[in-house]
Image 1 (spheres, rainbow, N blue to C red):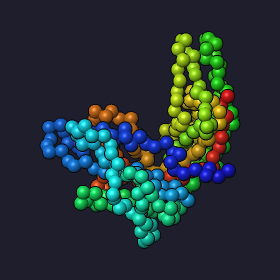
Image 2: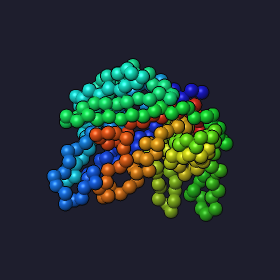
Image 3: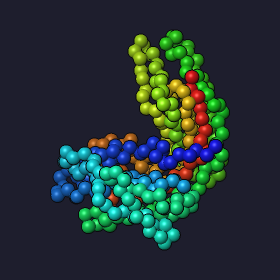
Length: 273
């Protein structure tokens, strides 16, 4: 079936983790003065969905500030010679339903900040191929029963990928009031509360999901997204140590963050019991 979802269901790249620490733009602690904070952009363009761009401000080195929304900007998205203004719908959140987001389309972003022009460009990838699953349900074993607990087989998801494009697999619990999976290990309950998770970006044609990745019982959506290289680069940098004081990779000229296209396959489902 058609997924009917927008890119907001794609777990974000932890922009606050990537850009929420002080960055030096290649400077050392002894360099002064420090550069002005840059705008941080986060946008995932998906076909037939509203164009949403979140713009915040980075933390400068030595500052006690936290990431804050940048309001009052006038960002625009361009496509095929047309320019579409984005309207601020919440502090630092700009959007439009008028931008025709389609597979293979090339889109540009531009706005001014502190007298400087900030720009970015991306392409929405073609859709992933059909995705198949080795199972549609998986059982949680009783880990409190002692040594020798048998684990269920992982669920393997496969798809066509002759070009070796990067994809990311996202799993999200859709229960209105889900029951957490509690693993009784050594008499101490361990709860994993995150309702959604993703596997690392992958350029192959299959990935598997083990029972240990799930946090809740019940119904889950499974969505495969085809992604662009800028997503992969930022994902891979998100685990870096914040003490490195080095700005993560970005495709934003005059700023930081990510402006990228994604394309989802049809939604699959899995029941955890």
